[in-house]
Image (cartoon, rainbow, N blue to C red; front, side, top):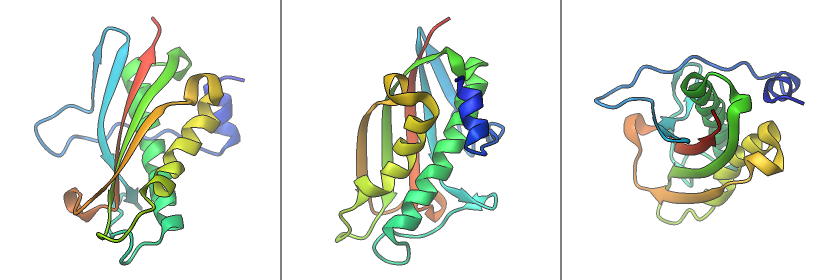
Length: 153
């Protein structure tokens, strides 16, 4: 099954690449690696604002991370032209806007990792990962995630 068949089965339509909010580009390709800039969680087109451990629970944070994964896939599609060219999702790095006592950043990030695994399957979608709790994310977003992928020509 192609990546696009899997996306259709999951009911996912890829969004267009978001216009960068500052002096950076949405992605950079060097050789066979594509580095995607951090994408913040959005809900209804606006930053998904909140702090895990204060006003956002773990399950909602995982939904926000899943939403970020969909945006990342849209950017990755724009970067390579065909998601079937992705040979490996190399790394996901997740920043979770958290209180100092919140310790479930890894469970929040699973919202992204699980979707990536569903879309690409274990051979391509299994990736290295970091999940950090941070004091704040731009625009007050609850989650920001960046991704590195390997592609074939």
